[in-house]
Image (cartoon, rainbow, N blue to C red; front, side, top):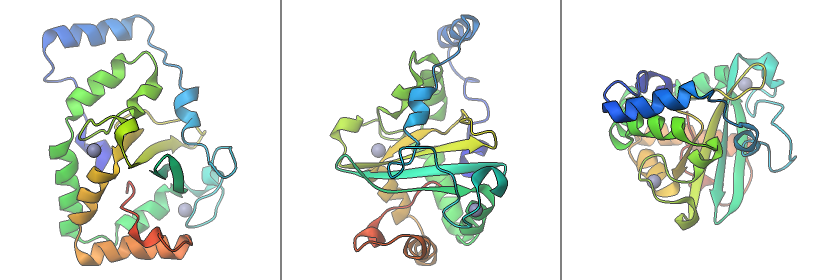
Length: 209
Ligand SMILES: [Zn+2]
Ligand SMILES: [Zn+2]
């Protein structure tokens, strides 16, 4: 899981005025209203939270200690959605080549200003607004042809608040996918064709793994 490791101390290099703002926001009983943000990660198909892992089919709280939800949108429509438990996710990402994992990590580290994002997100009145723009290129959601949103949940069904939840536009996701080796792209395509049906689905870019 690349995200957790790369954003350990987001505010360490922030300037002092930003630090003060962040401290103030935290001091003024910072209890963001999470329900709207969480709602984004309900299944479009059932209009309820996901219940099972797409890969092992187990009930999520039984499958692993955490799980990730990915939803892919194209022209305003959700074209693919799934929950994948931690163990199954490790299984899929473990098949990616070392060089692909390094490439993904370096894209995420170099193309996303995590320090800036984490500071902005902390100051949001409504946490849902973190999905208003691409985490990498900052283009606004309304202007995108497509995007992917991802969130991580813990066993009790609550959102884990960190580098996820995030939204990435399809152009940036395509850049990550393009950096993968042929073998790693095949791992991803196999995952898609094994678990989803649909003529256009082979072209879906990488989700968050
Ligand atoms: Zn699973
Ligand atoms: Zn982008």
